[in-house]
Length: 116
Image (tube, rainbow, N blue to C red; front, side):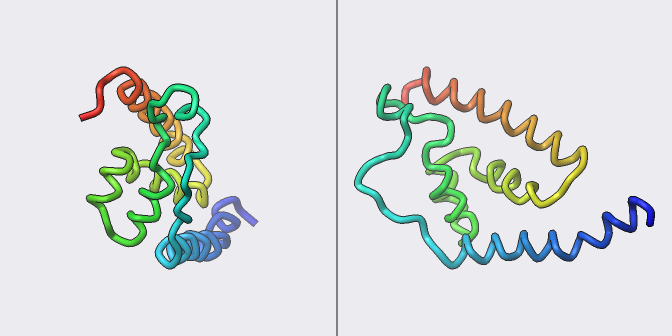
């Protein structure tokens, strides 16, 4: 069996898993907590690059793009990275490399630039 045949056999399963993730994110909402779990925020009082990302991904799945962008400006990239977990190959690797670099730059901006 060729590598292409093995890869194509797994496509329906990967699509089903991605669809299941989308349905779960659409159907449910993250719990509202009275405190933050972010250790960086506890120590510094400043948001880390990932603060608001969980709520933003749930908002994206529901189609609330404006709310998601307000919660975390890189939430569409985070959502794409989450969905890319179901695929192998160079595209996923490039997306994750670029995504982590973008989150690092975004984090530096969130830390050192004043909030508006």
